[in-house]
Structures are given as structure tokens and as C-alpha cells.
Image (tube, rainbow, N blue to C red):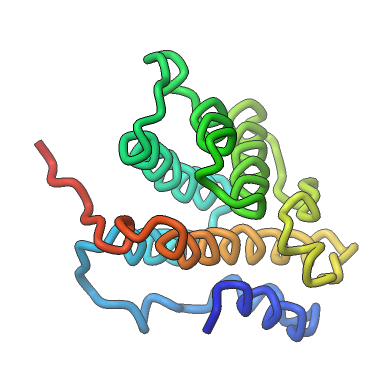
Amino acid sequence: MQADDLFRILKSVALPELPSLVETQVQDFLPKQSKSLTTNLIKDVVAVSEPRLLVITGHLYFDYILGRIIQEESIELSKKEFESFSRKLNAIHKKGALDTNFFESLQAINGLRNKFSHDIFFDISSWDPSCIPYVGKHDLRIPRRKYLLRAFNIVVVRLTFFTLALEMPEQKRWLFLEDIPKKP
């Protein structure tokens, strides 16, 4: 299965089924223990259904991955620049080390993370999922009812993390072998 297939499958899901899709247990198919960064990213993203925690969890993984790309690609950043997700992402993209879908998806996720970080009352149903390139690419129908839109947005965020986790090793072969760093 290609990473992009995940969004094709979402297009076939009936809107009333979206809330149950949020609760789908994918971790049953994943290994109980893994040293693989991408496997653990997927496990952690699946284990969380609260939107704020979901976004922050996935964002943290990709912040780490961006830091590793900067090291692997020998991209020069100041300490202050290195502390900013957005600056890391832009520097990597300017160097041509990420494709456009990947870049735009991470920009959208970072924007969503910022909304959650700066507005304690932010509701994911007020987020526009069309900023994720895969939503437009697959002409996904965005629900209007708030409870369906909430479920749709959670699924889109999850699928975006899955897609990026699956595509990343295709772009950066070393990431396929990347282990979770040992705790000091």
C-alpha cells in the first residue's frame, strides 16, 4: 500500500462512519515493541484520540525528524533557528531536501499546533483541513456538521502523520533505519 492510498480509502468512507473511524485500533497490527522511529510514531499517533494531544505528539516526532535531517544534510542554522520548527522546516525546504506535499503538510500541522498552543479553547472542528495537500489532491468531501467535521479532522491529521511517516523513508533512506535515541 502506498502512503497516498490512505487518503483514497478515506474518500470511500461514508460520513456517518467518521466518528467510529477515529476509534479504530490500528495498534493491534503493529509490533508491541519497536526501536523504529516511524513505527513508534504511528503507534503513538494511533493511541491518542484527543485532538490537542494528537497534534502535539505527531508534531514532536516531526520536530525530531527535522532536526535529524538538518544534521544529515549539514544545514547551517543558529541555535535560535534550530529551536523553531518553522525555521527548520523552511531551511530544509529551501535546500530542496523535502518535496512540496511534505513541506505543505508539515506547515499545516505546525499551524494547527500553534492554534492549540495559543488558544486553550481552540476546537479542531473550526480548523480547515483543506490546508493539507492530500485533502485537495483526493477531492475529499469535508463534512459540515460539527461532530462529523471534528471526526473528519482527527482522521485527516492521523492520516497525514501516517502518510508522512510512510513517505519519509522513501525520501530519506537513513530514516528507515533510525532507532529511537536511548535515554541518557
